[in-house]
Image 1: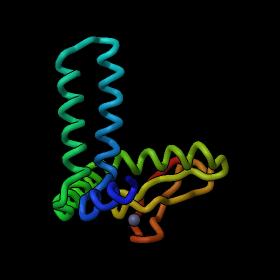
Image 2: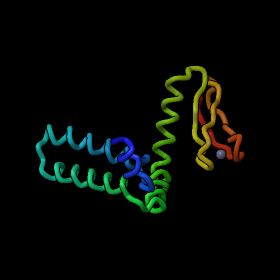
Image 3: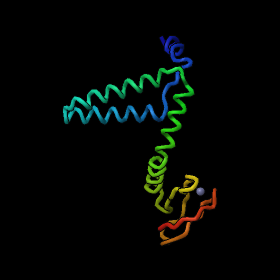
Image 4: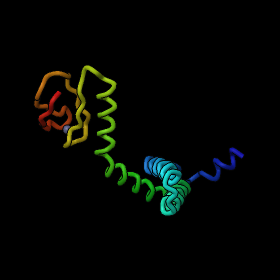
Length: 130
Ligand SMILES: [Zn+2]
């Protein structure tokens, strides 16, 4: 059985960030639908599941990878902000920022007031409050 599944998935795309986020969205829609009992949410969740299955079993790996890359580029500000929030929550001695020029995460000591931060990767300057 396992060998058949491996053979079936050979050459197929599998899962990626976009597929995972589609499934999270489906879960949210299912919960919302339980509360609201809305037919549109029901059909939308099934449509998203169909898109997710299509992408997972697609043999056009190049196209699926390109879609995922576009999605990740589009969502990059959100992903960066989530990473910064996680870092700021776990590290009490430093404050984290994302360089708007090159998206590198920059760490500065906390409690220094208004400071000018220089990105170590690209040299971009920006004002911040630590
Ligand atoms: Zn930079």
